[in-house]
Amino acid sequence: MIKAYLAGIASQYEAEDIEVRYSIYEDEELLSKEAIWLDYQKPAIVGLIALRTLLQKLEKHRGKEILIMINDAALNEIIRGTSTTKNIDVLQKARETRVELLRFGDCVIKDISGEREELVKWQEIFQP
Image (tube, rainbow, N blue to C red; front, side):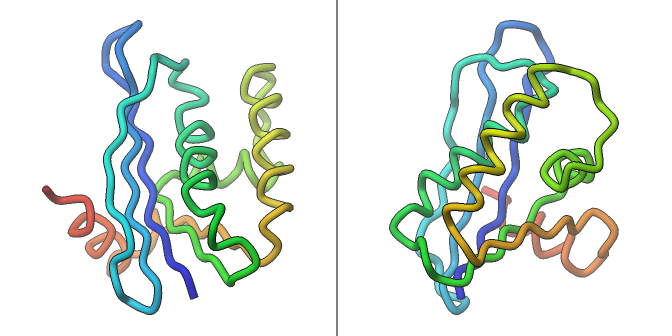
């Protein structure tokens, strides 16, 4: 089983780069850990951009059981289609991201924002 931890971090200032952090594990063994800086994106779609970036990195693991751990309740709602947003950019990126997720088959996204133990582990993983 592949387990990936993901964080998309928007800049506090307009027109500055965004940061995508991820760690990929296979059977508790670290395969990849990286922090990537990307060009500015609207804060509303940073989580979706981060998820799509991670999916590109997971491409060679397609077909395997994949669990993606996020700490972003809004991103979870957007992916599941339960968000009430009317933002056209968010809706378009969400649709594109769902299509990519379907190509992976057995890929589950889990929001850990309400689980204390998982949050502690998630924070430790992203410590420098």
